[in-house]
Image 1 (cartoon, rainbow, N blue to C red):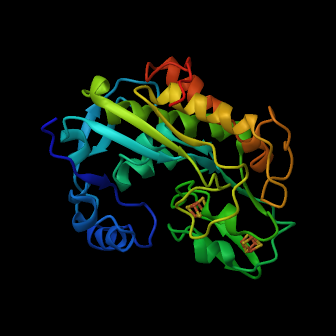
Image 2 (cartoon, rainbow, N blue to C red):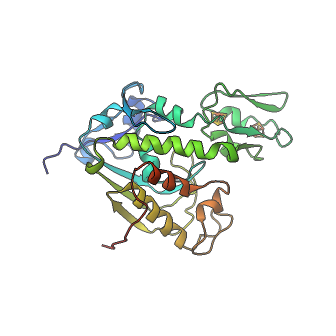
Length: 298
Ligand code: SF4
Ligand code: SF4
């Protein structure tokens, strides 16, 4: 078709192997995403230190403007490839989440995460320091065997929730879950702005793990592999992916604690307080796409 494709990603807000372009490209090459293998170069869309981005006007409730990584904003068109899986705090991660968080530089990810929603149950805390070690923002201190959170530094990323062995940390779900989802979905709208009719989406419903791929561990799939879905509409694609996962029988012995039967919400069987479908509802409200779909098997 005459296009000049490149593979892309943005730097992470937390540390690790994808927090700057040099480490990120090295990580990509180690996973086989080098030009010699794929036939096209990898370009980290927000630059060496995640400082390259464009302000994109969207005029929505949470953001008037969002920060989108420069090379994504400047690309003529985009194919968004997402691994569909569980996600705390979003319920599930698919095409919408990959657009919203995946196309934002660290500053944009930080804006989305600024929920300051983590609460500590002091009665449960045993002072083990797992949360202090895992926090990418150095927002937790454990003194006299009790943790405390600096809300000026906390980005609401949820890393500490995942690592606490006694579940002493949790989001304030009633107050903060929906604003967090809305911020992410508005970023997704900004990521496709100007190329709405030149963006396509693939969701891989394989190895459907309980948690996000950004966590430094993996876990057993919660349902059997389903296949690969494609659409021009990220909202329809995520709705279809969500429905297909929930139609499966959950795998016992995985992290799934309940909702094993076909038709039951597998993601709430993992993360009880999440509302994955609110991503879709809000995306539809702000015009990112439509949740209606027709499955065509090929
Ligand atoms: S949510 Fe937890 S891990 Fe994340 S920045 Fe806040 S205190 Fe740190
Ligand atoms: S990980 Fe949990 S138990 Fe350990 S110090 Fe942090 S809050 Fe307390």
